Image (cartoon, rainbow, N blue to C red):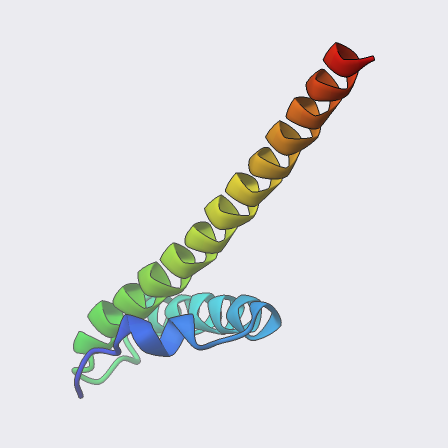
Length: 90
């Protein structure tokens, strides 16, 4: 089984992204539980795949947070500049 591509994670919507993160964390927990109770049958590679997928999803989530923060800061800078221009012209 090949590792997933980050483009798949980037194509998800915000709600889908949060759902995928929660589902991946749940699957990882279940794998850890199976390993601890010795019920895991030689599927150790699944840990790598799930950790990889989780890191991709969380990276996309963080990218979106940073974009939102940058847009918010830009809007705030524009508002401050407009206020400064307005006060100078008055």
